[in-house]
Length: 88
Image (cartoon, rainbow, N blue to C red; front, top):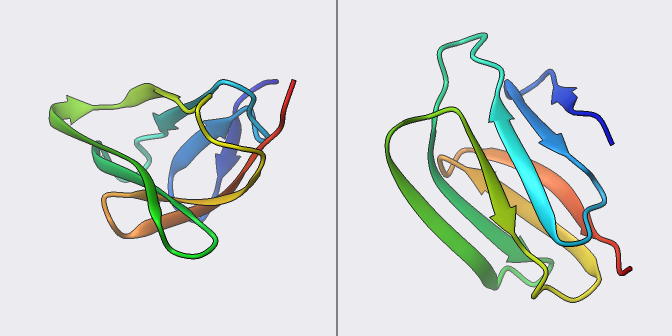
């Protein structure tokens, strides 16, 4: 899948749904960088967390350990997206 821009938050996420990893890229329309990422299940339980130092514009999250379902992605603890795990 090709990157899709989320106009609200200035980040591209792909593929969505994902199977093994999710790519995240700052569009830098507003000079944004990835500092912290956390993934939650629909019950609010944290399933993945990663912090970055420096000005990180893109990363690949290895999320193959997550079962199929709906997840909420938090970037910098203020940006939210719905992401879906799609089994192979």
